[in-house]
Image 1 (cartoon, rainbow, N blue to C red):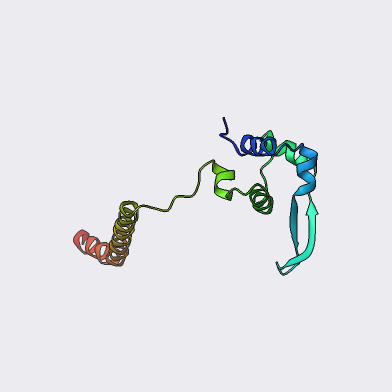
Image 2 (image 1 turned 120 degrees about the horizontal axis):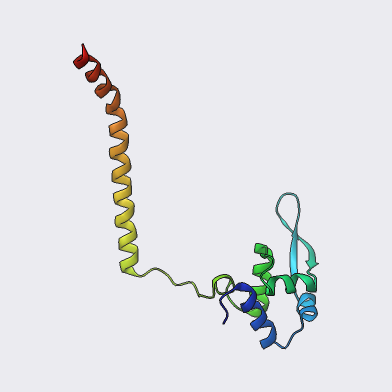
Length: 129
């Protein structure tokens, strides 16, 4: 069963007949400068990092997920979730648009009610007098 990232990673590593140490030497993570630009440097990971990931003890950084996905030629989506990205169907898209329209309509009504609140408060004061 490959229901966790760690299990999927272990399966991929074994399918490629790699030890944790061998995999660690093949994964390079880019290094970024202070402005967020990629440098020409790379950092390697430790075999213990692979072990911790496979045993679901640690969560990988986004850079490591990308590096592993590229190395194994799988999508980041699959590595993270076990599922490939599936674009929304036309029905799902229409439903989402309808829900957004309803949300926006309700938000507009709420704003109008907030504008009317001072008037309602004033009427309540007048009625009490």
